[in-house]
Image 1 (tube, helix red, strand yellow):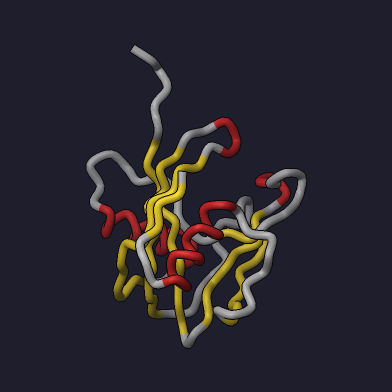
Image 2: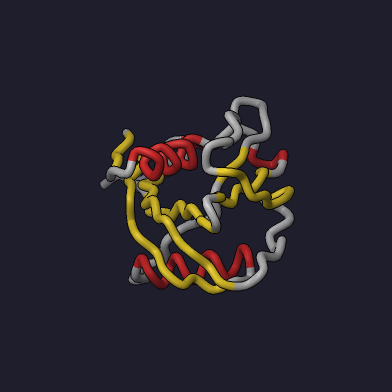
Length: 140
């Protein structure tokens, strides 16, 4: 039996007034030698529902509550020597975001949905593409 197997993670696109929330990843998470923007989300815990995982991740990373969420994509991510199956979710929140994971995120910033930066981590890029095209996307 192979000791390595894929893990499941959550990629969460937060929307507010036609804007999306992106975080600039710290230099600890360089992608091809560059800093990139990503979306909140982490591992889905064993026996945790997707909804509970979304709520936990957003509370842990931003200190706010999720009001609604919808699954819109599936992404395979092989960066950093890992293999993740990323479940892409669009969510709405209530409360003011906080910068809680400073070791991973340099800053959080709202972007107009039509003015997204080019330097995106692949799972964030796939998730935003799915949202903009209004269809379920699967990237592999």
